[in-house]
Image 1 (tube, one colour):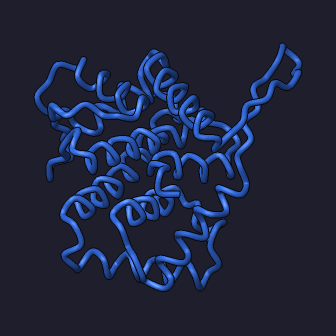
Image 2: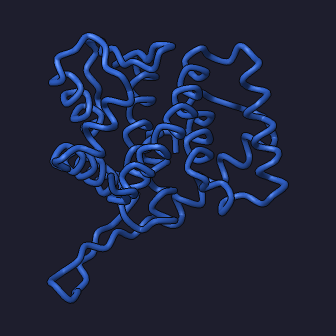
Length: 223
């Protein structure tokens, strides 16, 4: 499973629950996942004020490169994470979001994480996404084994668990006892020296959870 990126693993878990890549409530977390992934790969930095600064190193994953180019087109040395999410996920046009998600979807088809089928609907054909159940099970097994036994807590695994926790998937993936143990491990990690990048990313994820919740309330309530 090492050849599968954080965002691909996270998306596979999301698809298990939501069956679609175009869930309005969850799409911001996909963008956050990509930003975190690019931070680990040295493509960008996240400041303590939740601002994104692009580096000269171009991402290798096509979906990250698409997001990187969109941020670059904002033509600012530093861009607030909130501004990136607002522009891509809650703007007047969904063009950029669709282009990113479609590129991610293509990469997951290529890596045999998902398959696409066409199903007849009332107004034409509808695309149905099916996940590879074995690969999904392997991801969950990996998280449970490493976190509950506290054996090999890599940056990627910590960030994946943090992302899953922020979107409440853990309540369906883990038992009550397992979730308590995992949360305890996450708390322990925050007090150790395990990678400054991981701590910054966890703070960004937590901050984004609050921002996304506020955004969804504003979208749902007419002004």
